[in-house]
Image 1 (cartoon, helix red, strand yellow):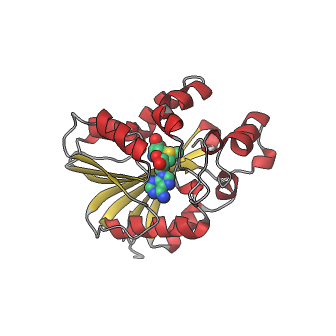
Image 2 (tube, protein in one colour):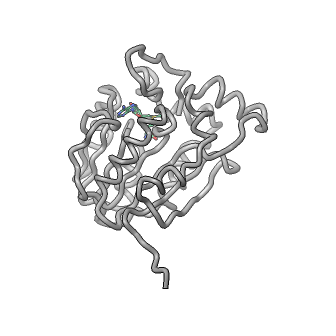
Length: 227
Ligand SMILES: C[S@@+](CC[C@H](N)C(=O)[O-])C[C@H]1O[C@@H](n2cnc3c(N)ncnc32)[C@H](O)[C@@H]1O
């Protein structure tokens, strides 16, 4: 979230890399532009998301650690690994979560090979996937699949499928002028189909902001009996 508020760097392909200023004030800026709706929204998301006591959680593009704190309060994870490309974000997240147990933040590119194999109960990715070209989105989804235990859940928070042409002016403005250039392209895609093709099943969706934002929950290696 926030792509065109940022100074994008020329040598990178992800469009959700934030400038140091934006990184430092990420939640505050989003809370201001959403007229105070952003923080309550994030709390509502984590209340509804299926994080459970003692989970191990991998957070792809963990940002400022805001969600890590909310998830820690709810589920007291036995292990929480946040990966982010931004030094600034990692610094903020480490500082914010310094009193929480079992949480680490590590530098990395989530579209590259990650060193995890069937070891997390949950993989969480919030407002990150839309900012990559499709080929890299698929690499990220494959990384999530590989990192999850069988039966583990992939929890994606991002824009939902919507026709921006038919949306009201404030939405058009947000997506076309303030958001990252790949957000609208992402909103034309069928996310559920995308992750189904990579092996996920048992889908659940929860919508926010008049259906523009969706929490998609999918399971690794769950097969419904045909009997
Ligand atoms: C829009 S912010 C979302 C942060 C957090 N997930 C949240 O919802 O509060 C996008 C985050 O993705 C990180 N990011 C961008 N490209 C990345 C990459 N290739 N690998 C890892 N993190 C990346 C950015 O540094 C930033 O923290």
